[in-house]
Image 1: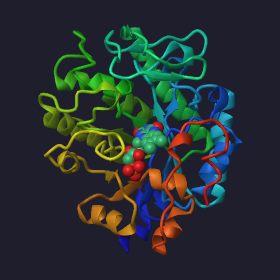
Image 2: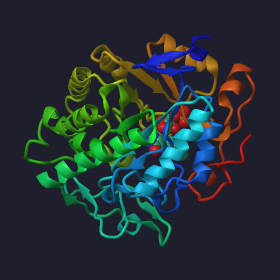
Image 3: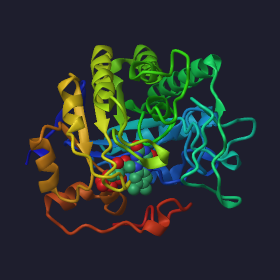
Image 4: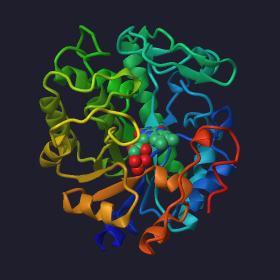
Length: 357
Ligand SMILES: Cc1cc2nc3c(=O)[nH]c(=O)nc-3n(C[C@H](O)[C@H](O)[C@H](O)COP(=O)(O)O)c2cc1C
């Protein structure tokens, strides 16, 4: 089957076309990547490529409890060790970098940081978990000024530069699922009147500038990006005016930068987005000259193969990887797959994390 054949991603040799999707697991006590995370990712090195859980670029971007970050030396050391573990098992790993923006409760933020976003519009349709006090309202974010914008972009570039130096294979920019970059793209959360808000080209400016700066720093071939068109998670709009034009424009501009891949998160799987009629990812693919990565609800090699036939170059698998560390072998042998324990997705410690076989 083609899905088990090797693929070259902008020069990086992947042993198969299955990508482990980025999945937050909240095991990083004090936001420091640790040995159990090294073991977890090493166990899953059979994937052609692992994309790590979302990792904060700065203290301001750390809106959830126990997510890993990548801005202090000790955090980078943790990622260095994880990358080494994956490489020792002949795997490859990109770190997904994000900034939570308005998806944040101050109890989760390290001291001295604050919740900032494109506009001062809080997320009210859901609440945020905190270890100290359980579910809490999200903060009302402070609207970012031009200095904040510059700083947040620099944070992405600095984290990426340090991670590449530490040995990770590449960086995925998280511009999906309602976090800071998506908050700039979406007209519901970006109501700015300056160059970074207004029409879709202005709303795309933050994502495109950040990507360009990162590509200049670490090389475009080491950069990928994730989008979630029509996504509703974290209070995003789903559909909006000129959404097709917006993603067409992003794809064309990202082609010019020359990044390795565009990754489409289909939120109809696992994240409750309503059905939508367009094949937006095909429009994006038609306007982008790099690799296209997609998936959602893939639990068999046959389903992954269908996505390749439909035009994707690589296929991501999320939940099945949580409960089946040796997923590739199980798919090859058509073994039945275990289901993840949903009670332990985000709990600290090894239970529901390292104890799957
Ligand atoms: C526990 C969990 C955590 C997730 N965390 C992230 C994340 O950190 N970054 C991200 O882009 N998507 C995240 N997602 C979405 C997955 O990457 C993926 O798109 C989704 O699970 C659908 O794929 P699947 O049907 O193969 O599970 C998460 C999903 C789950 C189930």
